[in-house]
Image 1: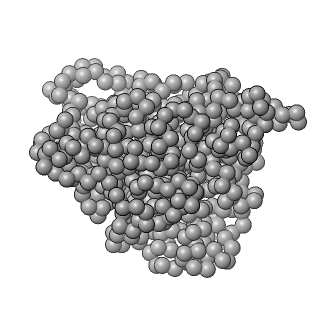
Image 2: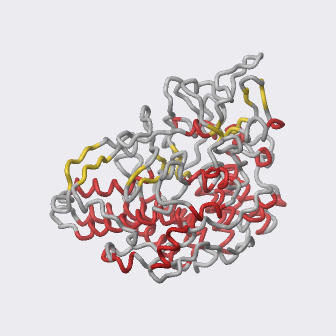
Image 3: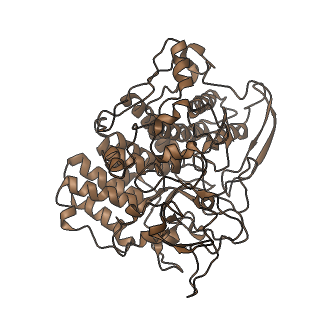
Length: 546
């Protein structure tokens, strides 16, 4: 296949705009073609919704090919960015084959032979390269729309939302594969010569491309949406802040940009501090009743009832991936204490696709309220209560019960999935304040201590704020505890220069920093006369250079 872009509008098609969240009504659009679509504002908005498709939660989606959604159980967020880090242990009890285990073991060379697209249990996310091209085509449609069909204000708004989606796709693919050759000019879409030019851009180039998309969105996306779950200017600011920190070591002035962004948020966010029934505000934050709380900048909004099919709204299958079927959900010990998740009585989980390494559990300070989302003992059918000494034998690690199953009669959960929280902004801000001046100002210490106070902890000790290196080490651990299984641990470890070192110390030495480009695309580039370098390594990586 020479072309990366495959037009969905080339023939008459029937597509469903499935609910992106609780407030999006599913809509069925009839027979479409390039002659009658898009022709009105509602048509253009329907086209925009296609850009959201990879960020909904279904079993899979199909834009340019069938792929895993990003925030579903088999999508890349937790699999690539959490299970490959020090927070988790390999899922040895899954018995789902090398496709899962090789990733957990950081044996990334296994994915050289990854086939294109979904392919059953595939972990290939490479087809996102074509999705970016399709998003570019949609952005071109907005720009070229007749003013009678789409006003100038709506053009800017729709393009801003589409560019958040496109920028986010590039961002994730950068952190999975390294720089990729994206097509960002609508006039180049469909040009076979340009689309066959498969070679890596520089890190500076792709960093700027992502920045430009997020920056445009921060300036032109709505400050508020009438429907929760649609992207806003504040979400773009969060993404931009995170991206500037990731790439600030090689992009001049970007640490300052990240620092400045904190003052530009308009949503009046603050940490969620309601202790609720549990007495723990961190635990309460992830419960359904507190979806889109005062802390939440963006979530994937999940409905109650969907089962993951394409015609329904988002669903949350978290429960299936955090425990094995041998771990009882409804057992009570002799003292009457319930097992880890007594509400989840509808069905057995599938397997411990991700878990918490007891060694990471040990890094929490005593009394840290955030540790309460981790279950370190559970009832095993036919055995009894198990704990640390059974890890590696009867279970793979402790249970990460961050999104508790609250609906006993429902097979799936309806907890929203966190995408951006004010706690993360405070920690990013603290990091930017330190990196931009290579010192530890009081404002950085105060920001971290605010997050720690919600967790029931005292402020950082003097030894942890005495130098830049000491503070950054403390901050990296703080991020690991606060943002456990929120899809940023591997990216954080790489940004702090600790990935290879940390994982090697845990006995899981990464074969490479990022995933390899699949062989089929390397060969495709070679046939066209280009050298698509299979592996990418950042210049400051202290691991193996492939």
